[in-house]
Image (cartoon, rainbow, N blue to C red):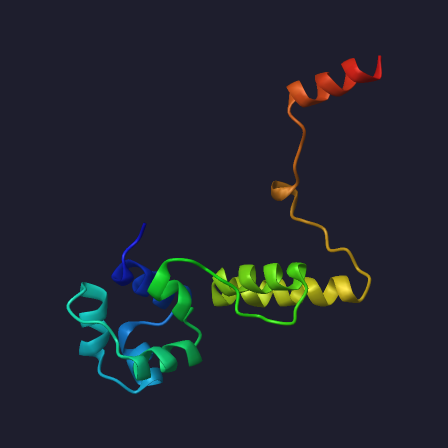
Length: 131
């Protein structure tokens, strides 16, 4: 299981913020961020709230578990949002674009290098079944 400082660094990187940017967003010093990432100090409750407001998953920071706090949503909706939260900002932009196309009824095609091509064994197994 990862430590608080490892999860803190992971979350900061997921948000694609450097130490100074995160410090500015939360209203604390860059030195404090460094202390958290080195395990020399832990943020107090007020800082944790502010970290949550900038997009860090505070539950994950504290427990190491990504638990959805999205009450009132269907399980599939929660799963999509939880996965979305784990993506980088660029990946989130792509996800939103993709979902917009799906909502319009367009099925975007994947680049040819991402399309699953059956391996010989899979193809042979299908042929055997059809006989």
